[in-house]
Every structure is written in structure tokens, then in C-alpha cells.
Image 1 (cartoon, rainbow, N blue to C red):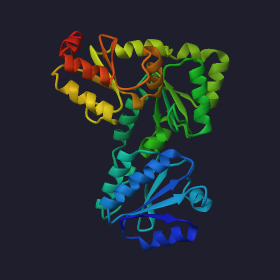
Image 2: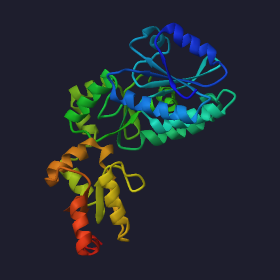
Image 3: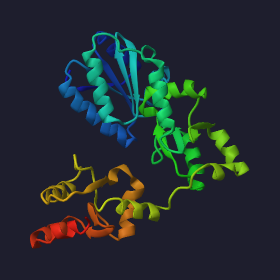
Image 4: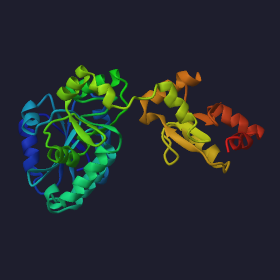
Length: 326
């Protein structure tokens, strides 16, 4: 089937489930108000072209609440995978590479995939230990700091940001193994979960108590100011390009053109993907008084964007300017 099917009723959904009992059925629970859902619908349409044996279904989560409640759909986008009319996998969030990987894996498996119980317990525990020690202050939450996807996660972010706490986060909706495994590992059944130096502090209520007692500020490392962070970033490498995408894959035409020019100079440089960090993306415009991207820096000094780099190339000055950073 080379098209995405729209399930508009409970009955239609159940018919699709029965009809495709022997093949893979992928259901996207979506909402028209969420732009990331539209993007994932486009991803599904592309996958449908290359996976003709898989049935892809769109189901508007709020329009058919009976199905959403049955499968515990609490956020969009969420993808459920079915075989033999049974749910075999779940993916929460807009993660196109992971969706593609799982579709390929399940489509090629004639049998059910191995459950998490079949993997050695030590493997997931080792992974969880590494995750909770990624940073001195680690938050496991639903969504991201830029886009929290539950009220409790939003509240804990407000507290951490208010106290300028430096932390990293992990979106448990993006990884079902971590989502379920961490509950058992820490014997804490809900999210968000805050860890300091690898030790579980607790959820929102505990963090509120720590804030009220004044202990939170003493326990957590302070975040850099945005200005200090930007200074550190532009001085991290002798030559650094702030762009949309990275060296391997530019995500706009201007970034692609500047990469081609830099690659032909033979000078080493690093890149920073401003699409991955909204704070840097907006802050650097103000900090450098330069409203567009890409932006090239040498020894912490802004050289300019694509037009400036083209001018330097045409005048023959580009290589010497770049080498000034080495």
C-alpha cells in the first residue's frame, strides 16, 4: 500500500487492524494543531513509498478518544506498531530517524521482536547508569526544555531555570526502554525524575521541597550566563561556523554554499548546528549584531556570513584570514 490511510472512526481502525493482521501496521496518533505531527505525516508518506508491504495509518487522537484512551495516548505525535492485531512497539515523539529504523526492523521481522526481558538486565542497567551520570544535574522528563510535553515537566523546568541551575535532560518519550527501565532501576514510578551526581533526588514534589528549604541552590551547579556560554562557544575552536546543519549535512542553501567554499581551502574548521539550540540561535544574533546564518568566527572574532566569505574568496584573502586562527 503506497499511501497513508486516514482512520476516521473506531470501526475503521478496528477493520484496518483485522485486515492487516499478518503484515505490519503503523498508526500515527496526531493532532492538527501540532506542527511536528504534520512533519511526521510527511515522513510517513515517504516511508509508504519505500515500504509497500507496510500499512501506514493516521488517526487524529482527540477525534477518536476511545482508541487513544485504550492505548494510553497522552501526547502527540505517538506511533504504535501492530502485527497479528497485537501492539508490538511504541514510539513517542517526532523522531524521524528512529521511526524509519523501527519500521525497517519490524517490516523485516516475520515474527515478534524480542521483548526487553530477553536482553540481559545488566545491559539496560549499565546504560541507565551512564545516562544519569551524563551531567552533574540530569533531568529525565517528557519532552525537552524547549518543548516540555507534560505539566509536571514544565513546572520542574520553571524551578530549575528560575534558580539558574545548569542541567542536561533526556526525553523519556523518545526511548521506551529507558522510560520503563528507569522506573525499576530507581524504584520511582513517575516522571520527571531529577538526579544530582548520579543520585535520584525525586520528582516535582521533592524539588519543590528542596526549593522551599533553600537546599536546591546549594546542591545544583549554576548555569553559565548566555553571554558567557556564547563567548565559550565562539572561542572553542580556532575556526568555527555557526550554521543550519553540520559538516555532513547542511540544512539550508547558504550553509551548503559556505561549506563548499571552506572545504576547498584545506583549512580545518568546526561547525555548530544552530537548529539544535534555540538559545544559541537567537542569542548569537544579538551578541554579534548579525541577524542571519551562517556566521563564521576566527579566533572568537566574527568574520561574517556567506557574502563576506565569497568576497574574501574572490579577493584571495580567505585562506590567510582562516589561517590566522591557527
